[in-house]
Length: 125
Image (spheres, one colour):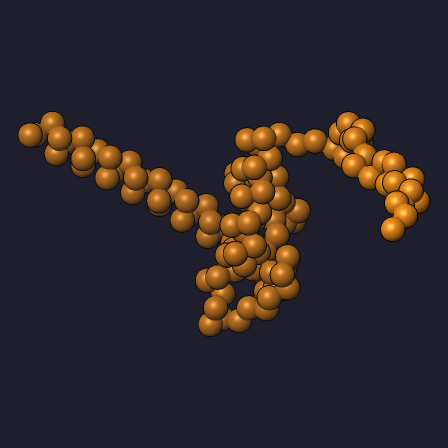
């Protein structure tokens, strides 16, 4: 039983260290981004005030949370909902890959081929 408690306390300690690290990192770039940019979501244009500022997040454009240039070039402010959607899009891209429109093969089947001729051949009543 002592092993389970030891493992549990080690896990708790590691998780707390990770939370502290994330909080410390976010304080730095979040505060900087809020000073650089207007408090508006970069996607949906929702405006924020001190009352709801906790719902405005900093999104890393290149998805590297350790890339935090002081000029803010890797940040954009997004509301919680748009930020979540942006990460879903990125996960989808990573999972399924990206393709450019020009690289797709054009469809060759035309379901309406011959429709004009068929419409012109009306059977007499």
